[in-house]
Length: 181
Ligand code: HEC
Image 1 (cartoon, rainbow, N blue to C red):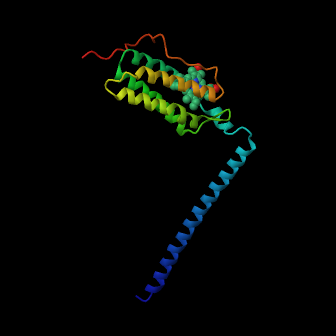
Image 2: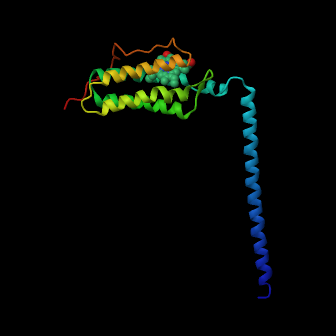
Image 3: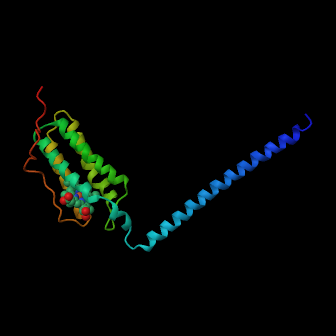
């Protein structure tokens, strides 16, 4: 065919134009992203209170009531020497703590996620170890330590008046004893 070279050149040009359009499109996308980011940063700098927007939306209080609820149930499970149930409630507490860590939460200028990692996580891990040991005598101590870590953070995050305790009464409507074999 006589026209072959011309066709090849045409096809190559089409491919090249296609590639240029694609590159243009991704550059445009990057630019939009950068613009959005700078606008966002400016917005945060305008605001004196760090993370202020974020914290009004973040349901920290709700997560805390869950902590409270599971802390009480964990207390009962430990009192009843129910290892399986204790581990179950401890995991619920751990999941909430991990969510708060991942969500990078500030509350009234306090970096809650960092405190969660420093204060609560070690107490959770220690309690986990005691529960996994077959014959630990330190489970009650580990639980008391966990509860006092809750309060340490309340002090550090300017809520010292929230003083949680080891529960003295049980939630009605649940049998906390281990299953009888
Ligand atoms: C990293 C810091 C931190 C840790 C750890 C922490 N809290 Fe809190 N807690 C707070 C802050 C901050 C508030 C105030 C939230 C608000 O203003 O809504 C709060 C509020 C609360 C409240 C009041 C809300 C309510 O429902 O009555 C309770 C109860 C509570 N926490 C329980 C706990 C328990 C139980 C633990 C431990 C398992 C715990 N917290 C661990 C920071 C923490």
